[in-house]
Image (cartoon, helix red, strand yellow):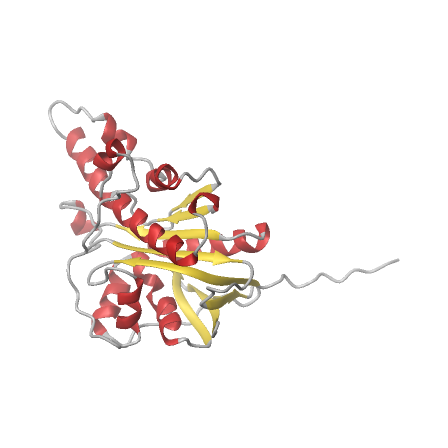
Length: 279
């Protein structure tokens, strides 16, 4: 009788082609990189969300904070990658979705007339930012919308890296969060908006900045997640779920080789092997 030996799962290896970043005191990835490698001093400030000018005027008027931050980082990341936005499958991941819109719907339901505007209802679905991205970029490719509360960035990264390896094509990952107004802010105290976009590819290219690898047999660990030495950046990392990406971005800024452990589920973290692509 023939015997068969099960093969160990192949590592998930991807190359980082483009990055977009927006958050408190961080207006784009070049500024973020300079803060993360300590070239400049990080000074926190309220996030400034640009108008999504790639949207038609009618959709632009309907766009709230969550759409503004998601589209801003997605556009920056895709532009940096040199790839065509309309050809990229995407993964959108957020712990809260549209927090302001949720607040407004709850306020309407608690009022005397209890009427909800069509625009509010339209924006209430969790994949609203993905839909607006499709409109602005012309993308007709597949798009996933995920939510894993505080683990949403790591869950999105795991999904995107899996798609890159299985499908053999570049994927856009966008992770983002916005803050709730009171009274929900007291229960979910996310302090501000934050977004990050990563264009990940299966092969190294001219613009590749780093190679990230997940080893299926060792990517889940009980080791504590990496923290940042800069106290202000560490407060940002720990207070906004999407900002859990910052240790990984710091490895890019510093061109580090080794392992970065990201916050994931309770008692389980995600270990990513990182190596720079030096030109």
